[in-house]
Image (cartoon, rainbow, N blue to C red):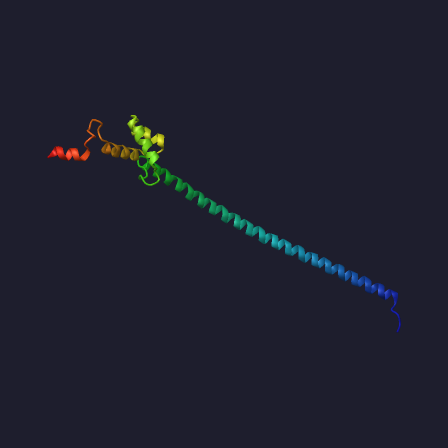
Amino acid sequence: MTSPDPATLCYVAVSLGLIACATGALSMIAVVRYRRKTEALLDRKSLSLSTSIDERNAVISARLEEAVLEIGSLDVRTSGASAPIGADMGRGVRSRAMQLLRDGLAPASVARTLHLGVKEIDLISAVSEALSIPHSAPHSNGARGRIAQSR
């Protein structure tokens, strides 16, 4: 077997090197093109998403403003009304309201002081007056004494 000519070996080596360089260059071009396409696609999607978010924010803001206006109109319509008296009003609050009413405070003032509705205080006042017994009434005989006196 004969050994290859050194010039041929150099020619083959240089040719392979050029082929490797060309392949590397083409690969880099392909990577750059792919990256540009991907970035352009991401930019379009990002712009689309940003536009969508801005539109939804505008819709939500409009709905929020409508809700605020509706709440404001409800506050105006119900400013004289209050929630019904229920289990959330404890005995201490009712007692305090009755004491303030007995002390001569106006129902509106009692309502502001206790953070309650005027109608609630009016109801407490009416119930308190209806259930109050005059101080001059005789307590010694009680109900039996009144029944006996009526006969």
